[in-house]
Length: 153
Image 1 (tube, rainbow, N blue to C red):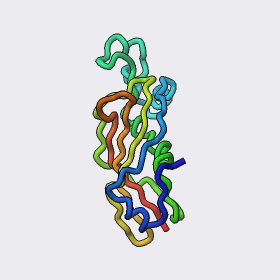
Image 2 (cartoon, rainbow, N blue to C red):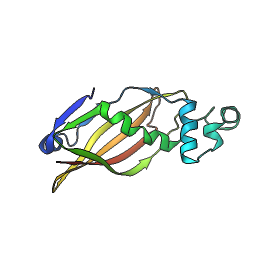
Image 3 (cartoon, rainbow, N blue to C red):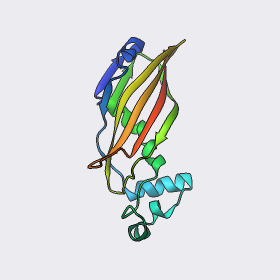
Image 4 (cartoon, helix red, strand yellow):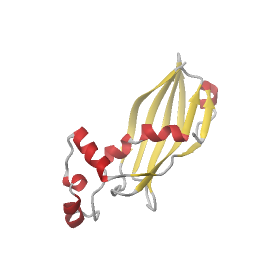
C-alpha cells in the first residue's frame, strides 16, 4: 500500500517539495543480475562472474548493473505514492541519473521519492520526482535520478 495517496491535479500540486515516502526493502539477487545481463547484453564480469568479482573487483564481489537499479523504480513507486483522478499515466523520461555507489549482489535496496515539480498541461500534469535508491547500511545513495511522469485526465 502506498505511503502517500493524492487525488487530481490540485492534490499533486499540493505535494510539490514534499518527501512522499519509501518503498519496502528488496534483495538484489545474482539471478536478477544475470537476467538483466541477458536482457541488455551487458555481461561485464563485475556483474555476472561472482568468483572473478570476489577476487579482482574493488567491490569484493559482484554488483548490480546501475541500470538494473534504475529499472526497479516502476515496481517500487506504487509502494510510495498512489495518484488517483487520472485515466492513465506514463513514464515520460529520466533526467540527471547518477550511480554514486555500487549495489552488491545480496544487498537490500529501497527507493525514496520527493515531488520536485508539478506542471499542468492541457489534459493533465507533468510530475518531476527526485528518486533515490539506497542500500541498507550504506552511507550514500546507490542511485539518484529525476524521473518524469505524465498523468492524463
